[in-house]
Image 1 (cartoon, rainbow, N blue to C red):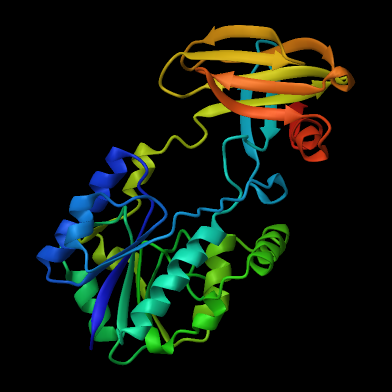
Image 2: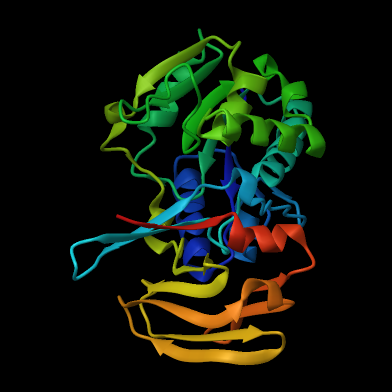
Length: 332
């Protein structure tokens, strides 16, 4: 059967490019055909080693706090009480379902047109120490439509595929389920999130295109010596800017907790005037009053290390909600 490895990649930094480069080199050493689909530019040396590269410049990330996870940060106070900050982070996307579906759908359509039969889908930050998982999957696909791995901790069996590695027979796949429809996909994201059907993207993709396949489920521990998953987590800056504006008796406050790895220069601009500028040391937190009534604010800007983190226009309900609705304080 004609087979190929399809790598889903997003490598906007040199470190992540090196992770992709190592994976492509390893796969080519196993004599696999390799395709990369990406929303970031693929380095030219990696490009030349691949059999196909699918690049989609448009990367429609959704920043909608209504279906974004809450972030929790709490501190024990000297009086024995606990202060908890609960908020939707400014620098965290709500969903990347649109770029995933647009990128993968186009790639699979093309590979199906070229009569590929087996596709091994693998994420760029997966390390393969040997080809055993791919060889095993290919054997299983002689009788099954899809091979997916499951984890007892994730409890994903019969619910969703672990994206780091799964293999399938592309003629058996319902590609119409992958068809790109922004309005429909965003609607599904909101529905799944509101109903607690999580992780929403993985569950949506599974239900649209994979749930009716004859799937062979393999415990991920079976190849613990062959795979290392999600290594980009070690490079992640997720939540490095832990900060939020909140209200106490309609007075604006600012909370920040520096876990970034370096001293942070924080500057807050209200109504085009700098009202607060300070350096925050590593592993220190602050909660300060900005001594202004929320109703008096027309515009609010937050800078960290001279980079604009968030620009609030108080004429917009969605910007006001970030402070009044999506940021809470609990004292217990």
